[in-house]
Image 1 (cartoon, rainbow, N blue to C red):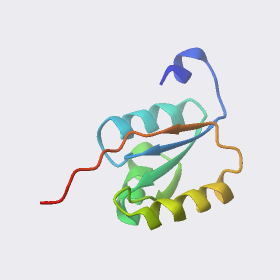
Image 2 (spheres, one colour; image 1 turned 180 degrees about the vertical axis):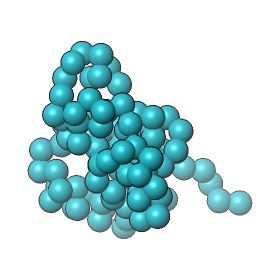
Image 3 (cartoon, helix red, strand yellow; image 1 turned 135 degrees about the horizontal axis):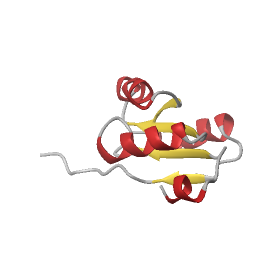
Image 4 (cartoon, rainbow, N blue to C red; image 1 turned 90 degrees about the vertical axis):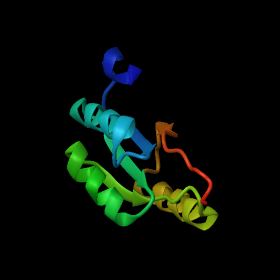
Length: 97
């Protein structure tokens, strides 16, 4: 979020885990400050929730527990944002029980 305080605007920023918590708050602030946020969420439903909660951005699916999903996300991101300025790895994964 240092970008907000530095007055930088207009960046393309991908953030994992924006459907809730710190990721959602970061997305809100960045969008409000003129950045384009790519919401990298576990599934389409969470991505849609993130866009609504943050007040904008681009919904994208990236399930960090599934390498093929991560690869598909990377390929889609190259198309959506040929110039990516920031990648914020906010989401965590936990082992299944």
